[in-house]
Image 1 (cartoon, rainbow, N blue to C red):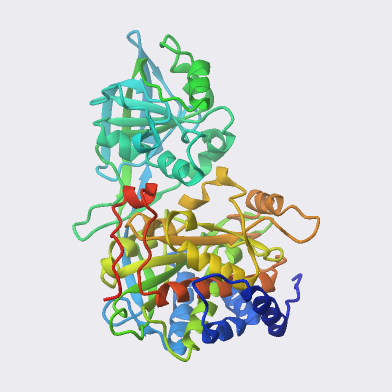
Image 2: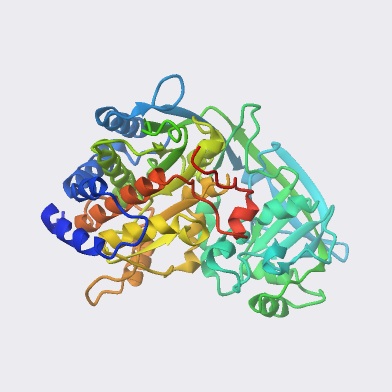
Length: 556
C-alpha cells in the first residue's frame, strides 16, 4: 500500500486553534474545541481497513460480509457507550426489501404509426423498468412529448401546463432545464415518473439529449438491466413506485430520434428548445404497445444499525441530530484483472469510519450535548438510498423530533482538505454551524465543482430532506495546495475506480484530511445539538416548501 503520513495531532491543534480565532457565532465552547483536537487519524484508517477487508466480500446486504460489518459497528457503538436504538432493544432495524427484474425474453415493445407496427429490440432500441405493482403489465396508448417532463411552476417552468396526458404515454428528455439551480435541477430531473403518474399518464418513455452520453442506454445497458429493489411498508406495498405507469422505458439515441418523424417539431428543434430551457409539449404521431413481465420476490431483509447518545438537557433531549453513512457496498461482481471483490474502501467504509470517530469524540465530552445524538449505519444505499429512506420514513424515534441530519459518503480525501462543498447548507439555518466549524478547522467554503453529477440527490441525506428535515452532506472541494486539479482527480476517480474492485485500501488516502472531516462532522452536529432553536429551512426555500418541513420551535 502507498501509505501517506499524517500530521500529528499537535499540528492539527495549531491549525484549528489559529482558525478558531476568526470563528463567528455560534461560538464553539472550549470543551468542544479540546475534544475536536483529540481526533485520531489512525482510528479512521483502522476502521476502514476492517470494513474494506476482503473477508467482508464487499458488504452486500444479505451476505455474511454485511453481517460482519454490522457486528463491527455494533461493537463500536457498545464500546463507546451508545445505547441500542433499533428495534426490540437492539442496535438493528430491519428493512424489508422487494426485488424486481424484467423478464426480457417475454417482454416487448413496438411503435405503431400509420397502422404499421414496428417491433423493437430489447437492449438495443429500448430497456424496460420493472413494474412493482404487478407481474404482467400491458398497455397500448398514443405518445405525447413533454420536453423534460418537468413541472416546477415555483421555478417558472412547466412542460405540462398546456397539455392533457391522461390515458397517454409521455415521452421526454432526461435531465432538467439548465437554468435551474443545481440542486433543484437534480431533484426535478429525478421526479419524471412521479409527475407523469400524477397527471394521469399510463406510461413514461425517456431518452437523452445528444450531449448527455452518460445517460444513454448504449452506455448503461448492463447496469440498467440489473434487478431493482424497493422497501416495503407494513401492508407489503413497495414504496417510491408508480404501478399506474404500465410501461416505463428508456430509448436508445437513434430510436428516440425516430419517434419525431412526422411530428410538429423535429428532434433537433425539440433539442434546441430544451437547451434554451423553454417548456414544450406536443403529440407525437405514434402509439406504443408494450408488454412488461416482471419477476417479483420478497425475503431479503436489510438492516440499519442505530446507536444513541442521550442528550443532557431535560427540555431538549427528546430531540435528535442524526448522523448517517451507508455501510453497504456492491459485494462480489465480475472479475476485473482477477479481482471480483468490491471492497468499497472510499465508498463508503470511509464515511462509516469518519462517523465512528466522530461518535468517539461525542463520547469523550465532559457533558453530552443538549439534544440527543443518533448514529445510523444504513443499508441499501447502493440499491437506491433504501435503508436511509426507510429509516427517515419509519425512524426508531419520533419523526417530528428529528431536527437535523448529517451525511457522509465518499468525502474524497485523496489530497489535503483545504476547502469543502457543504451540500444543503444554502437551504437552511444549519449554514451557521457549517461556517463556524469550517473556520475552526481552517477550510474554505467552495461551490459545487461538478454540478452535472447531481451529488445533492445521490446520497442518504436526501432521504431526510424528503421528510422535511434540514440536512448537510460535506465533500471535499477541489483545492489541493499543489499543481494538481482536484476536480480532475475526482472525475478521474469516478471514471476509473468508482464501483469497481479497485476501490480498496491500496489508494493514496490523506489521513490528515480524513481527520479534518471528523472535526467538521463533530462540530456541526455538536453546535446544532446545543442550539436552543432547532434548524429551519430558509424562507421560501424550494425544498423546505416542497416537503412541508415543520417550523422552528423555541426551547421548550
